[in-house]
Amino acid sequence: MADSLNSGNGAFRVNDSGVILTPSVGAASFSSEAIPSAGGLERRSGGGIGVKAKAVTGDMLGTSAGRPLLYSLSTTTGGGGALSLENTSGGDLWIMSADLAITTAASGGVTLDIGIGASGSTSYDTLLDGVAASATGGKNAYDDKGTNGKVPRKWPSGQFVTATWSGSPGSPVAKLRLVAADLTSDIST
Image (spheres, one colour):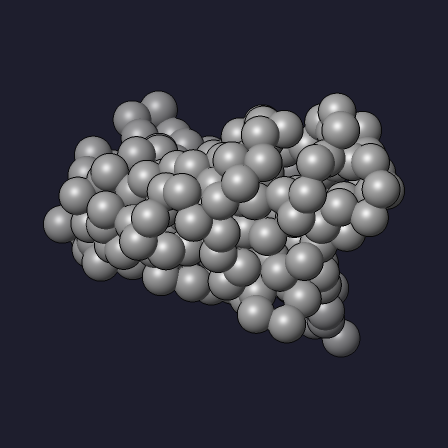
């Protein structure tokens, strides 16, 4: 059972499962071999590791890994009445998740359709289809998608995400969280 690795200036100890046993690791313990040259990390003067210039930035993660978008839904009825959101990014996006939080329930047996389509005033149900809005709680496009809903879904440039109540909702309070990603970008450039 080997539980140490001699680093030349002391013992860096790990157990057979790879759990680090050494209470702390100083900057001198990081050799240049431990920092891959193409990995976006670099050794800093005085020890330690930092992120290289031109490494992955928050902006890159926001477009390539997904940026959360949060919207309060209106009580307006009709196609796209609760929400009408156009993709004005100039490129196609992908909706990676669609999550609905209902903090005040809608009246009666009102349902909600959320989807993607060419018109901002039409009801679509390609993300969430017929979600019961008469109870509080969280809904998502994985577990509560209905017949036609699913993610991921392509959101073409110039098209809309709409949310539509099936009838008069009363005074519900609901928020929709979308994670939209630009999967056409190359974050390595």
